[in-house]
Length: 492
Image (cartoon, rainbow, N blue to C red; front, side, top):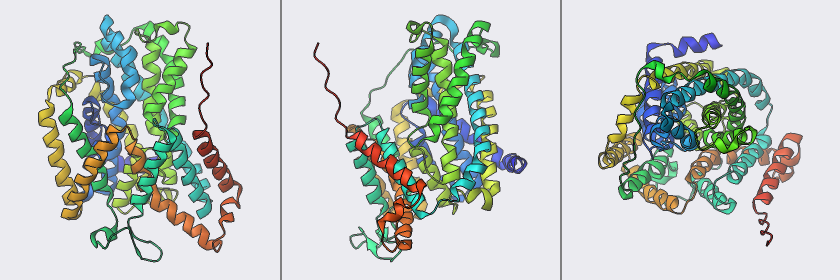
């Protein structure tokens, strides 16, 4: 199957789109504010005319390529281009100030390559047996697994549980707009024939992420941060023997930790990097060095965020479930091309499954080859004024939305949700949860109603098997734990 994957991924067309994906991912990681969510939502309409495998390869390349680009600005400017690179600023920038910018970028690049490659190998090994296990799930088990996943994502969200659940409820509600899949009755359409087909993912995602980002760019001031000089020559990126010795164990620990965190709903690169930093600081003999140029504080998180990205592909490809908002968009991209990711994908369309997986091996090699020699070129991208960047995003967004279905109403929806997304971000709501619930909602509803049809309306079917009962217990436990009042501080 891996040989089949290589035969697919090594075609000139797929190699080109893999390169485009990782190159765009690097640029997106460098530009503060433009994350993979915004970029993937903008590019989904572009993939309509593309081969489906090439489209997924390109979009996936953007996802795992972002972490590399974010490292460059974190080390040289102390500006995280992406959320997963925030931790890199702490020690990477301090190493650069001490004249070790090249070593810092080298450790990050080689650690990321190792973690990303190991993560993809782990996905290759785990996917076939996990797929067979998921095929044993019935509608009740599938519905409760998705319910537990949504509550777990809400529990792990950066906002409070009530605010997170509000976003999940909004996403589920928007996912119900349209025609009932079982009795074909219109729901929440208010008599509109346009809404009878439901709200399309593309205008919703572009509005919430792309247009709201334009509004944020318009109100932010230009930051002229000090840029440290980029290393010159490939030898400048080679760390010393001592730096290499200190980075080996953190990279190994970050790889394992990041991959496991990536498997969890709500996990991924950002959470993995923060957890890795905490672990390395606790294990360090000199914890006071962290924040002042500790090699371990750079190596561990950089490995963790790339392994976390790879780990997120396991639930995406094997279960058809998104681990985070980015993989939710990737599921949407699959479905737009008529493919449902999940346990049947590996058997029905193995060329897609293994082609995408093998392209991640190749993409990691491309990222190392791109990022080290072209650091100086990539840093210059930061000189692009936001006054030029915002109109470009706005224009591409509108063209992308209209080209999806050639429906002007989609443009109206995108603009409306652009303002909604802007207000939600001002209120510090996690709009990624809304997209996650929007994608999962119809799948959850279909599985739950199929289970109730089998049991003739008896809700006991959700407790009829050990698997579904376990998921119910997890969901209820996390829900109650999230509303547990915090213990007041003891007065001194």
